[in-house]
Length: 342
Ligand code: F1P
Image 1 (cartoon, rainbow, N blue to C red):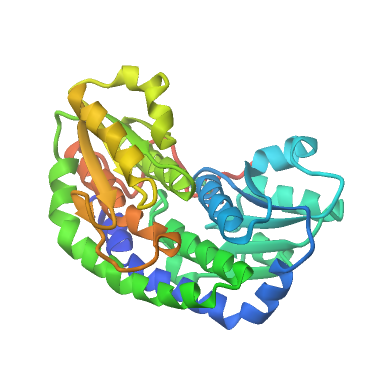
Image 2: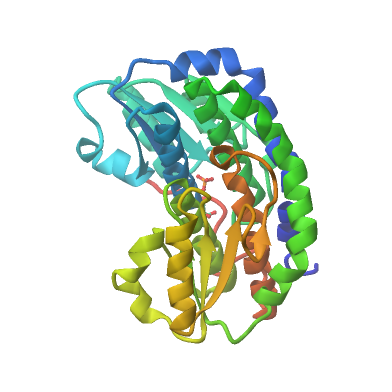
């Protein structure tokens, strides 16, 4: 079979999964609002690999929107070092997993519930796996299911769901309603920038990648970096935008691509970093609402359009994988789900 057939279809069809995510939150908004309104000291987000990076992105946005303490921890830390995470009071746990069967995530939820630490909300793509059954509430996005090992459509669908949940928790119903413009914006983005992603993906003068993003965009930058590792076996690292100057920039040369997930509110400060890196010889790629090589031109508010950073970066990794003669559908050394015998 043609290498990457599954991955390409999953990337290009993801706007449908975004719409499904929005519908699932809408359909269950009453019980979801109830669990989100719980009086807890903190809201914990957890997952593994891609879904830990999703937890980072989701926790940052949730706290920004609600003013409540929210943090992300890998499921293995919540399970094995829970005293470094839990407080004396109640927490709410948002457990994120494409498969719903990753051992660390399932065991961390079981441990959290066994010690009555609070309620659990699951975001997943499979209803018939352990996680959905363990949770007090679940957002299940079946259109996000995928054959490929590296998450693309699934990740984006669960990130859209987590964004909609943050808006629900913050009572920002207009913002949540505006998210229904995202699938169309995503279709246009994929059509307009598919050639650019292919061109950059095929550029063999690049041999290392840095993805820069701050706040919710740091989790997205981390996911984009993981895609580059999983699909293309390339050196790749994420950093908070201005952190890059504090040492890591020593690594750049003219074989480096620095990808900026630019925000609107801090565009000036972030763009200055990219300008400096270009002066030092790096190649750069700017993604932003209106002033980048990749411009969304979505007209959608910054706090609800984070998913728009993903499609072009997923395609970038996809085309680099093929250029290197790899098969993005089945990355080296990886399985779709990590099962452990604890
Ligand atoms: C978590 C995960 C993925 C990773 C790989 C192995 O899966 O670590 O993030 O990319 O596919 O599994 P899940 O808990 O989200 O199903």
